[in-house]
Length: 264
Image (tube, rainbow, N blue to C red):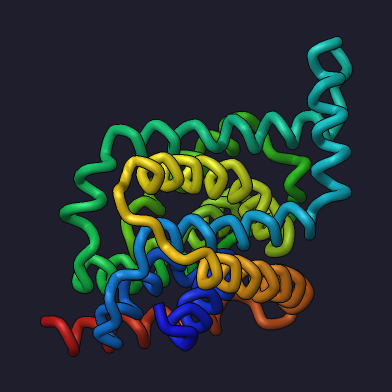
């Protein structure tokens, strides 16, 4: 891989993984639009490891509390952080099941630019609706089991390229009455097991392949994606209440229309 391709793809992964604009769609579209060769599984694993590192480091204090209180929950002690840990685990189950059941369909039938275009537009409009109509009165600690399952089921839709995992989970959380920052924070916490599981499957597939790639592009890609993802999380949470979801909705609509014009 050329250095420019490594830098661009790593930045795309780092900046789009946590914004409601679909990282998978952008990683599919960049090679299509630039005529670059496919970056390969090893690179995908590396940049996902970078974004996973970023979100774990950013929420390290919260994760430490959640883990301690989650362990304490087995002894009958119920705390907000312990319940939030259970919410993250339970909310991950639907996407894990859907990924296993629909893996072949996703990889063969749903990676076309037109699927991405339609999903980008439709789920962008849904995000706008949720942001306009949501009550924005609850924190992530106020989630009920039915709320967690609803967000988890919504997250399964992110297996469709163009949907955006963060976008659809934030959309569902806003519809359930969460504040913008709370919706984003829960979405980011939900990303940790999802990225870990996806990276684990990709790693197993890569280890089963015959080709071996040079480690330098992988390390550079992981580093760039980690730095850019950490900055993205920080500024997104800091500016979210001020700017709302409209800039991301507008971007999705423009991107969707451009894709329809290019590939119809």
